[in-house]
Image (cartoon, rainbow, N blue to C red):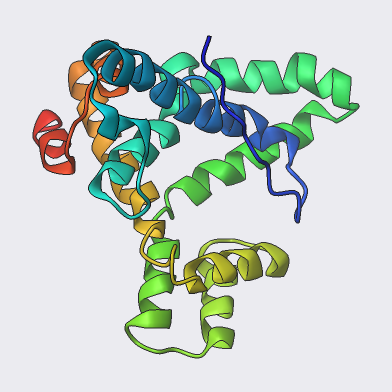
Length: 205
């Protein structure tokens, strides 16, 4: 049995409507599933020891984050996720189902703004915009509270992660197009086999 340790940043609260996406992204069928599947098939099965690690800011991260961004879509339709949240989970948390529906509607708008964090990183590092200006940009166009905008600013300001921010939007789009064209078999293939971003792009054409 293969296990993963998932660390959750609790500097800001994890909101209930975001919980299914978080579980899918980090666990099943996202990062844990991808790494466990490749550990079993590639490392232990084929002896490809290079797949026992994942390097940050390597091309494989585009594919890996793309898988995780689309993980919830691979196992649950939006209607199923909403029914789960507004039913069983809302009752357990003591929340009003209509409030959750309103949050989900806002989340759909935010997903259409997936490139905002990358643009913020470009403004900060390429254009050398002041941090206060980038913070205001994030609050305005990412529809983020000041606390979440500051958290994003810390992430894109970190030398290790300032370019990593692009893996989410670029990888997410590439995997979405590939799976829309090839279906669930394509998603399963991405979990099992090493694929470059260029190969992934070709799969979606």
